[in-house]
Length: 312
Length: 244
Image (cartoon, rainbow over all chains, first blue to last red; front, side, top):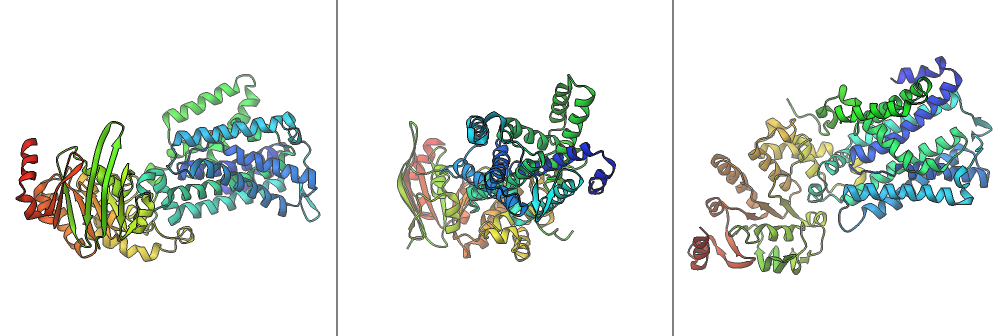
């Protein structure tokens, strides 16, 4: 898969390479949601808050401070995502009592909606139109324009983050996350500080979403309120459910397939493509609730093992 | 000094008074049985001690510290461990991972992220599985176990953090006679390591394993004493006969 991804810009026309770059960035965003939902069982229906606020954040840094160096803007986007996730996560997850899935999903959804409204109404943030004409990211005197170079840059970051996530979920910390997802109350009785665990993974995922959001802002060259809102938040949920939650690679597959199919459909069936896509998604969720990935990986393999394999 | 002292525990759920000034004192390395008719408040008292419920009034002291308001994770860190009445092993994980999960609970975050204790804990995981006769199933998911085996796994997990006090809520629930006998055998060696509070319907089982008994009836302590004392107690006889 990586080989195909590496060769893609050589065979694709330019506008398709740009589209593919966007898909890679969305894959990164999907990874962040898979980490919170697929691994820790936290239903974050507001993952776009971290994606979008980082996008807006870097857009403002560029517009008002004139800074475009990627050594500053990308870490800044990461930090913005992390900070907002800490704030929202702290508010929703760190109560005296454990918070239910419904509470967290509605809370994050509301957060997403509120940020969307705020961005639309706030003149400083450009209101409905967002912030246009963001200049390209730079490294020294080099400007990173959209095209094959940006593609490889995004691919490199995606692979790096993917490997980091893999490392994290395969560690003993990953085992604690699996316990969190399976039975939160039970592991509290083992002595796990459940809420702290949740806040940590929520923030890590927020940071990844922030990184994705800042890449997205520079790639598209503008940010607009949808990036923060419910539409984007729901979209990432669909990517991950479609591909298969709790597998990391499923998030990537889901994003690529949904985006590719919608690209193809929107060209071939201009009028009815959203309906066809909707039906497709519904079919997968109905017949393959564990996502596309379940066609190749069994439930048992998906959960996997954390300990050294005991002697046979 | 007693290891555990629960004083004047009252728990009211809406209009129902589940506990009404219940008391429980457990010394170090004592096996203490908690018995009583259905609905007498045994499980609620266990939950108040373990932190699954907060008592309406009363205090729980553990090792001299007042832990009444501690959340469950902090009670476990103080040295208390609970096995639930309903088995709640993590069915999707292997037995090995279930035990590892219990053993590593108090490790620091960096050591979890970098899996620093995985090697060290391996032997302990295997020893726990060995002790509870589950080692052949180590790589299977917990959902594949029989009910009795799940109970043993659950006890193994509760023992994993090396607690000073182990709370067992109906460890032999749903077990066959043979499984009960084995459970008794499995619990005996624990005596050197920690105290035990055990809620159980099977009076034969509890008589064999416990040093002292507390009898609850309608949310209050009816009687408390050694097994022999309780067996000859007229009050206890009366309650059990009345309900039989």
